[in-house]
Image (cartoon, rainbow over all chains, first blue to last red):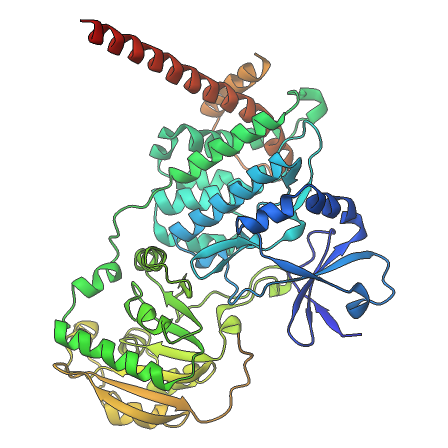
Length: 470
Length: 70
């Protein structure tokens, strides 16, 4: 028997639980309670159809006795395909959240055709493999009870529609709000925060505004007393169509974020930028073809560059507009191994949920990787008051190799950061930089960037990393 | 007609009363009941849209037929 440990986030659905085996394999139990639904999922042909359309993560069945000998409550064991890097909705851009919402509705529509219903519409049930979303909860489908409404309607509106409307109609940074409300954003709060013009869309008006009022007015009534009548499949299909139109009405505005315009509006000369690209491409030929983490990736120019020599690229930025551009460009160019994410590295997503164990912090999830930290150290130093030693210690917690840019205090960008402040610049020097980083990393190569005073260093960590790899 | 009356009642009530927080109201029950009403309303809206498209299509054909006769 191989020992297994339950995933702390797996407790909501009695149909089955998720475990991690000693070897790091993720398995899902299908409990006897869900047997009838699971058999229908297969026999009806829905499972195959979901796989064929890449809507649901594929899996193989494993022997129950291998992990749970003698446990009669378990019907099957599934070993799903591994997701390279687990992310949460509050780390997605508008386009990512929209894709995840449309995927959920597509799966729900398909289930309806096969006499089943998607009983959960949690945004946490969607994961991204590069730019492609996929549902991960195989046990979310159950046989539809005749004339019953969609059980996941409220969840869909709270997990997808409310944050989408807030991000689209109010401010892209409000995506962070999903992290504060793990069960989705309450509709009355979303309505209070939204500008009134969102109601011009009839579908958003129904599913957000009237829905929030309906919750309060009808919440005290007993369903038997009101008896609004049966809901046939046709009505459910129409509900899905209306929700899809509501999702599609949450469009994006023209990217206005400062960083989204960075490459077309900075002080790099074309030659210097090309030279920088060459340095990065050359340096990545020297590192192992592993996972790369691009910190402050902006619109992903360098993430796309290193994607060729990396197994997977986690592309982090704190500007939601730049992030959306990054996601859309990776999608358009068909680069399948880039995962753009919303993350402020000075305040990364924390662990949340029950006992702070349901959703892991970003730092816990970051794998041992080749790290790109270009044009970031001066921000950490001047805006966040983080010494080079503190920065080196941070990168040492997950970087196998580090491609890092040093920007001298004579650089115009540094001058802008300093602004009117009187700062002690005695510890801001290349000597201090290499000395502090040298405590954790072995410096392999120094690349001066032509036509610029900037320098890029390739470093390899000195001590073996304890972190697990992806 | 029952759901349309309910929906109109809901709209008018929601516009009259300011929003208050009700800690002991189950939003799940409210959502459940609301969805049944909303699904019916949406079905009427979508059917009306399909009907209007159909009428527009017919009118378009008649107009183009008249034009071609001239």
